[in-house]
Length: 499
Image (tube, rainbow, N blue to C red; front, side, top):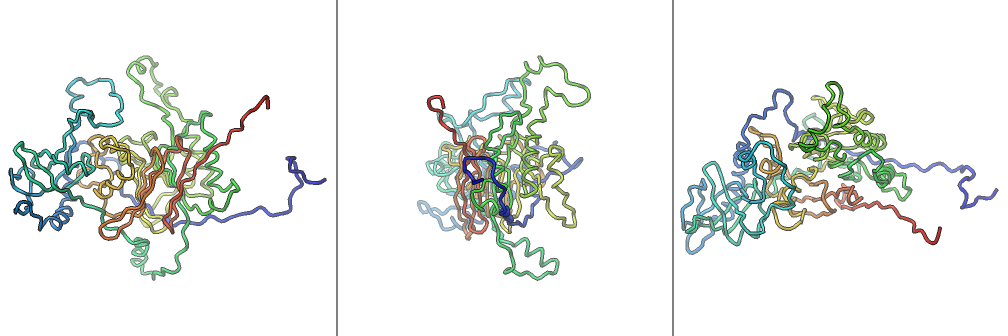
């Protein structure tokens, strides 16, 4: 019987099924944002200590940059002189100082105002921006001695939010405000060379480093905002994403080049949203033993677990939590619990102190930092960028990401409007090393660019779009640092005249 292209049943082919080998990756996660365990974790500290700690950590570096930039600066025959504290500023004297920015904005949530009103209040509506249309917002610079109001046209050239550390030069006017002439920031920290951490570890073990024998690297896939519901409403695009990552689409060999998948937050839809006081009062009492089936919905996590279990035999995965995932609301969010993944957790293993192998399936913190094929990756689920967006004019997410790096701060608006742990002895949000790749998940659209530092640092910025809204994922080529956006869509056949 001859073969017909219009029949589904065909004579079995004697040709072998085509196969491809996925490029492996060398993976080294860092525990930069891991919180203390058990009784070592305390919430009795004051959050003000976090601001003073940031200032103490960054002030020496910013002072060096400001001193180098302004040591010969003169205005009206007067040379700028440094002052140690903001309260040491004198009217009419040209000077510069280092401090923490505080934005006083009328539309910004204020917990002290809420407490002064009443203990149980209706949550205010979510605001897209904190910027007042009447122009009543103020910018202050503060340190341990006090607070000083900043003013001047030069401030409009800079993007500033609460919590960033800057140096300002200018003079105090008759109204007691500091007229800003120039602003300096810490800028990008030292960037480690590629493979530096691996070479250092090999040298400590007494091994000889052979740079010519390193394997060729592949691509890293980044996706965020999968938002699994598991109730049948999940898009068919999630199935297309699975088939593409497994190389089942039959398009080309590009999926075989993908060496690791990074899921940057919001993998689950809100399975148990916070209910109002009226809804809580109307609901019957919860069960004393076992979980409350009304308040808890395990279906979304089951759908996510099955999605991961399909990929894991072929593709290693790093997963970050997001604001809709079952993790702490405060950042740094700790890894999603293994109990959420009964099928996938068999691919995870515990790293030993003696240097065990990293997990094939690795649930990590948000933010997260680690090395992939010698490149330093730093990323988050999008909360720092989304919160920072409310402070500033415009919607350029890449510009906001660049400022986080130049401020050397992963989350400057925490703890003002972004929940965080009250660190007292160490602030993990301060960047000690400059990454090669900096990504932010759950952004409204895909965007990417490259920025440079004062001593040749180069960082690839990637705004990872929300998959639920854009049906897009991002591919980063480790060797060339080129980025492409892969968009999935389903073609709908048009119905015509009874057909």
